Length: 125
Image 1 (cartoon, one colour):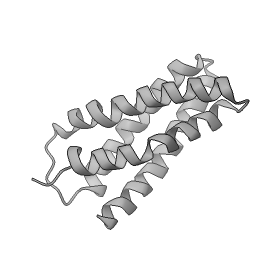
Image 2 (cartoon, rainbow, N blue to C red; image 1 turned 90 degrees about the vertical axis):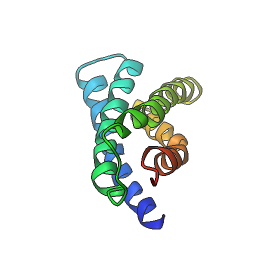
Image 3 (cartoon, rainbow, N blue to C red; image 1 turned 180 degrees about the vertical axis):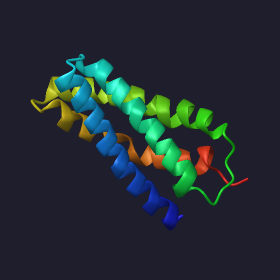
Image 4 (cartoon, rainbow, N blue to C red; image 1 turned 135 degrees about the vertical axis):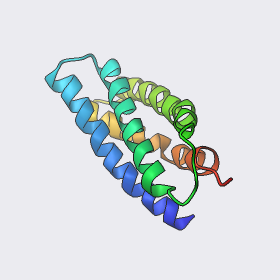
């Protein structure tokens, strides 16, 4: 479990970079509104993270391709909904930049994402 958790963190750190980079591109450079840009950025990071978790984090577990559907229906939906709700709340309550609000949103969902990935998406057979 420690190995999985360490790898989860490495993939997650890369996913944070993907998500924040995509959010910056979509919101600051392409001028998409904050919440649609957030949803697209989160989905980009979810797909990035799934691939790396499937190929590296939990590569010792035989996970069928259908694990992508489980990942999308758990981590994907919670990440998108959670990020959108947290972003809206953080931006309303605090005078922080969009990227800071998004980084805080990611932190709020961290534990759930690890547990659901370890216990459900890439579970032992």
